[in-house]
Length: 165
Image (spheres, rainbow, N blue to C red):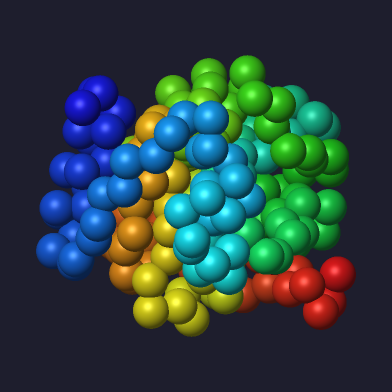
């Protein structure tokens, strides 16, 4: 188990809630491929997306949204971060900010200074699939684990549902 995977497991243990670690082929780590191959529903899979400000530069946040929803970067997230221009962080910036690669980014081992916002729709599930910190690991957990992470905030309307898109 890598250092980041060990930190993910420690964060899960600290919540006291049940979870399951799921090994996965790194080539199938992207959400759609993982769900299709391993038989998990997209509606219960959550992506951790890092955003980066462009004006002013250098501000970041991590957002957890259901795989079936679309992060409201240009309105809701931009206002929350208090910046004029915002975009999805490129893979290299995501790796620099989180220490994780796209397809493995998890809210469970983020730097404590990074804002962590969770879309309220994620919380409606009995369980969700999250990244495990590497492209070789996923986590199946009660979404309440997210509310127990340092600095995490549940935000209504952080993402748009497919019907609203």
